[in-house]
Length: 398
Ligand code: PMP
Image (cartoon, rainbow, N blue to C red; front, side, top):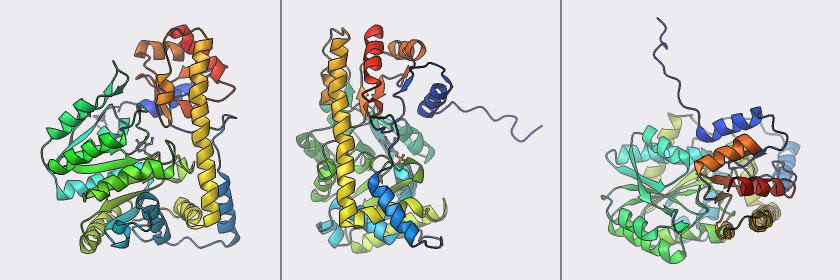
């Protein structure tokens, strides 16, 4: 008998499985709106100019590849702090933030989850209903019981804010609440600043632990605008976890560049937290890889490259907005009667289209148009060439 004879086949990852299915599909006009990746108007994954320039400069003075410190490149960590909290912010100046380089946003979430499990093993985790597929799995695997708070109301196509607040108000002290800082995945509906204020009040009154997942900073309204919610939590005097991802904003998916920042109450506490985050990292993968972090640090720390990045990110953001409007117009032109203007109210890479599972399956099998079963479509994968076809396909299944 083999050691593995009782090992069961795990279900395929819903999104990555969809990718495999797409790649195997012979449909000549197939369009992949499943995975959350930004493509340019040519349908290509962009290599940003700022990244190219930083890589060129790095290659001109090639460096040996020693181990990085456990918490990553110092210039990277400080650039992340500046981006997320503001370089001149009181928290950064006071040394209250512990930031570590992480393997993408997923890595930041996982380091945070493992650390939280050590300091608060009995806590429950609440994620939004619905949320990014991996939130539940990641926190479950870290040993937590994971529940949900109400978020999306399909009937009104908006946030069920009263429901959300009631669920947060009912949570036990110490409950870890995972919040999408901006560009909610999968729905595309964010909270208003006034609603955030109420969430912060509920977190503070209920002594909950906020964990903000910021995977799309700059894809909503702008880098500063999207990050503003972090400042609100900090101003409220809360301890706080923030995971950052540069996968999308630098189009560096495969380099795995992200971070975890933890806001502590004072410098001494932050130093102790950092020492514990380092233990988690040391026993998981020892230290992070060099290349992606070096590129992002080079861009963020150089005024010219930084300006170029902001411009390129702004172009990605603007193109997505153009595609949202084009989708609404195109659906109307394709004969769709119902009002689809909600698509332009949503923000970020995704649109929760409101299509049923059956309709999504028909889109896939009959038209080669791939979105998730839940009706999520990646607007950032639409372009001037495929949008007409996608609109016709949607019109056929609606
Ligand atoms: N959080 C959310 C909400 C996401 O959508 C994603 C990426 N799909 C991540 C985290 C993880 O990002 P990364 O690829 O950098 O690990």
